[in-house]
Amino acid sequence: MPQISLYIDSTTLQKIVAAARAKNQSVSKWVAEQLRTKVDPVYPHGFDQLFGSIRDENFVEPSELKLSDDSERVDF
Image 1: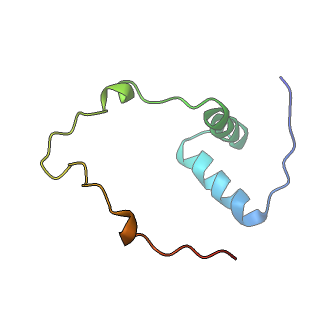
Image 2: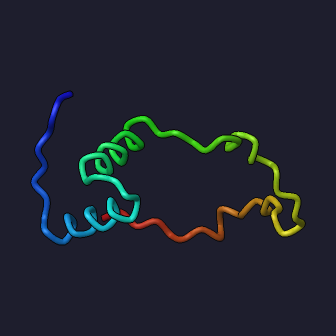
């Protein structure tokens, strides 16, 4: 399996080590898992079924805003 080297500050390394320990994983396995989720995101089972699933009167489409209510644009 290919290997990579990372240069990282000690504060971040401490956080990585703590996160790996919390999941009872090696640092290498934890980092590989984190990278894998960034380059190939995986959504939880049933995630695609969530759209439109909330039935609550507080979740309504807001009325269209008037352009005149917008902030004045300033060119820099």
